[in-house]
Length: 144
Image (tube, rainbow, N blue to C red; front, side):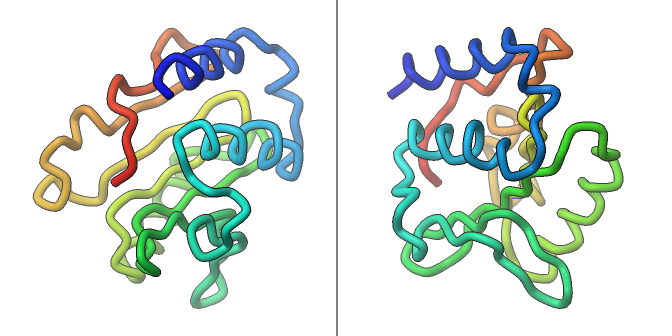
């Protein structure tokens, strides 16, 4: 699993077309493929729950284990303010009791733990990847 994920992220970083994807294309070409490579069953809506919403806020996916949402993933078009999106995701995750939130625009993205107490390995799990920077995806890649 590790080599295909690393290869996929390298391809993302070098593919200039990623910066021009719309949300639907980023969901299909980036998010779903990456989730599949990480071992998530993208065809099981109980595991990869699409268009997860609450209180008039919707994210692209909630990743669930045994019916409990563990991570929310939002896919946006390139150019949206990542700081504002992060604030919204943190607030939403807090209201829903979800410990990890992530976003991508196809060309880059981030994953954040809500608290270090809940995720002691948060330093290893926090990451930013981008075709616009030199940072890379985290070395740890396992389901929660």
